[in-house]
Amino acid sequence: MVSANVASVLLLGLGCLVLVSCEDQNGTSNGLNEPDFPTPEYIRPCNRSDPKIDSCFHETLRHIQPYLVKGIPELDLPPLEPLVIPELKMENGQGPVRVRAYFTNITAIGPGNFTFTKVRVNISAYRIDLHLAFPKIELQGDYDINGNVLLFPIQSHGDFWALFGDVEATARAQGVEVLRDGVRYMMISRLLIDFSLGRARFRVMDHLNGNNVIGQAMNQFLNQNAKEIIEEMRPAASISIAKHFKEFLNSAFGKLPLKVWMHDA
View 1 (tube, helix red, strand yellow):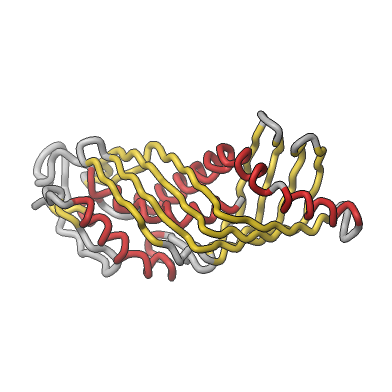
View 2 (tube, rainbow, N blue to C red; view 1 turned 180 degrees about the horizontal axis):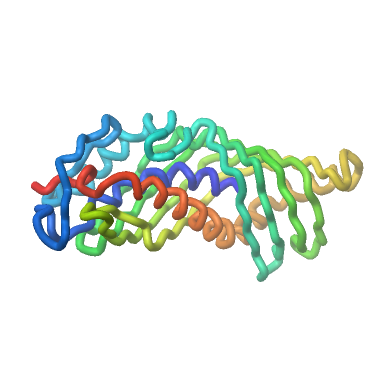
């Protein structure tokens, strides 16, 4: 549930993917009708022919980071601090952790304090790889879980709190170019996310069991087995996060012409 928010931050950085797509940059063929769009203050464009394109993308991401923290209303990008996610669903049907989890009203503190540790761009393949690090991310919200965890049957819903430290995440995005009314846009066709957590703490307030012995035992169990639980749920969490943010980011990319991000020179 944590990585979702974490991941949130790192995926917003994928905006720079729009810089890597297009064979024709002149806007005079293939049905193109692209004026000289103004460059927003949060955009620091790269040139497609730049031999140091990875470094340029890195600087582009560093430039946009403070704007992402505050949010960019014209692109429908909400603030990263705090980051609010209405809902996330995930299901893991194999291994010792078999659960269906539904998280709502998620608020994350800490996603805006991230560092891009590595940026790699493949222009011909329209692909970008991002590596990010977060000192810590604190989450809270509502949850509903059914299933089995390490042979321990669990049916619970209520409020949750979680603290994750030393978070490292990677995002690999594949882009495609689309033409709309003669203007090129970049959309994400595939997004893969992975993450690792250095440490984790959980606290749940189970509305079914309350603050009784069962509720206390659940909190103790979660914290004592945090590493195993997270590792088992990581694939399902990664898929859920990627699905959420692919839709989220494509909504923003649809408002930002490719030419704004990538200069022709």
